Image (cartoon, rainbow, N blue to C red; front, side, top):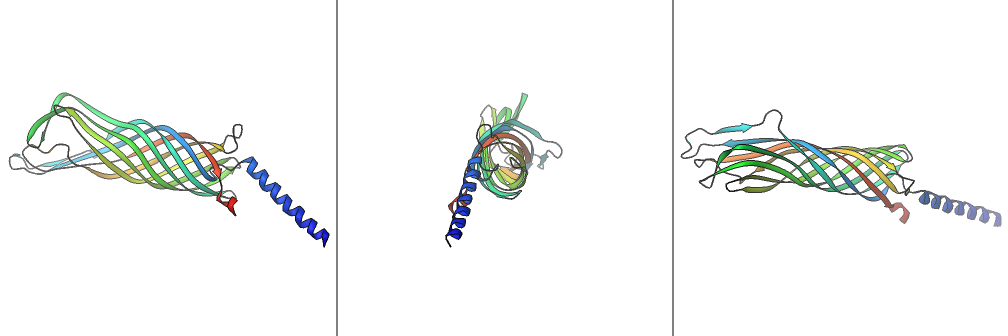
Length: 254
């Protein structure tokens, strides 16, 4: 009986030692609770659409201006934070992740001549129109597989929301803030930087977002008193590189 107890004690001790060794070696990439920082660049296309109706003194039947092909190019830098939790199930990975990035991605159009608009019945002119994405944030679900013990390839899908500042500059400058959101998908590669810390990982990846359609109200009205319905639609692609750090596994509580 004493020998049986000794064997059980030896097996238990071996399990403790093995577990300690595993945690000393670090988490697998994106395993457990992790936080990190991302930086990169973004580009995209914005397609405007403006529909006008006949006003009391407009003298025309109204109409629609729309970019049906191509669009206006967005370009700039992004940087922010990411946090998530992931499960390693053999070579398979599943997790959730949230991100928030500040941005200066924008497009700007300038004119060498004054463009006439009407605002509240008063004629105004402008020579510059711009739209700037100030931030974006959202949540994702992640699925992936471990190419090897220190490298994870994953895809993710979710929803991103972005804030845009739209403005025109001229005789009386105007601006408006609006929010555009839509489905987003991405892929990434996470690799352990074991030479620095076994829980530190390098991430390289990208995210594509479809902004669907958002209304832009309040920038000018049609000369003559007609109604103006303005909206924009488009998409963007962001490339990122960053660092993440895993520091807690809920399974350690059980």
